[in-house]
Length: 469
Image 1 (cartoon, rainbow, N blue to C red):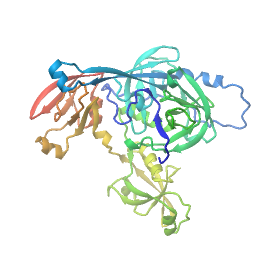
Image 2: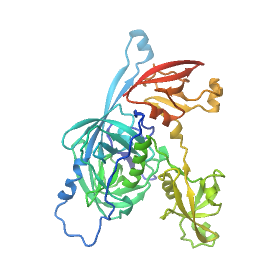
Image 3: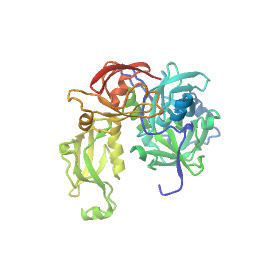
Image 4: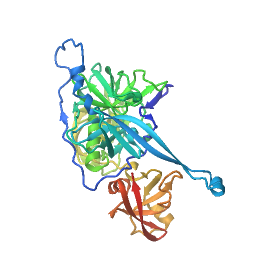
């Protein structure tokens, strides 16, 4: 943004980076997504009576909002000369952070932000009734700043969710969380705007579709609930824009519909599978619209290329110079609209594409492919341990036989606790006796506690044991 305002993430204490993804363990057994309690009716139904208190509306949702405490051990390496001469040991420091979360099922699934839990060594969840639990990370998605964590308990209070597509500017909303660590707090405002894109997630090529609200939000509110006037969950509070790191009435929440689609994928698979249409587009400017004999105010995106040539769009019959104006009945006014609508639809889904060809409206059905993202293949496997798929270039560099499959350790930070476990250049072929070929499969193979990896290093094989905590 060209303004001097600062986009501030809301976790308190440790500023955990958006980049990277969940390094926590998962059982091999796939999880079953929870059945949500959904109330899809609009918040406004006829003339509303005068209210003197919202206490009864909020009473049902407040117990479902929790505090999330994260901790991370950072090892500071002593200078080499001091280690050699005086045997000065490395120093470990415990960093702590604070955020919020929302229970969305009675058996302990919690929606929160990626930046609340990213890189944390330990997570504690404090309920509104002062019960405390240790939480495990189910999955994270830095590109939307969504994370799902879980506590082992049952008969827990949980939120009723609403259809966030039905939100309107001016709707009354409440933000609930633990700002600045003072305890659960409720603030009130309205929806200031919808479908905001402000560049907060640009560093990770993220997907922004924020709800903007003037309900006061401060550090510690991250991952907390944005609630409508019926007491239903409509968004997950994520960020603020401020010039002083405090609330100035410009807060942002991730719409519940987007958070739900990410949550379901994380719970069922541990990763996020995004749809892929296979088109390259440009904005439809008034000048381009006029050249196609269309009204200057026509909204849409013009197809400039089909990539790949046999991809979903090409198979559906789309061509260059087609102007896409809608997906599944939702308008496409920009490339960001198209990217978001396709990305939040699972691969294999049939979608309806509305487009203009030679000025005439047409509709075609396309089956989405799977978007291959770099985050699916490479990144941080363990704190300070970066990996990459075994590409042809790496095979040649490491002189690896074509029959070898796995992931390559490309870098280990000096502060990583795993520096004495894995050597740079080692190829991890298996984790816990499961073959791994990319970051996603490696994470699914790991579990909390003791793990075993089969590595190929300089032509020799050996097993190494490492701990995930």
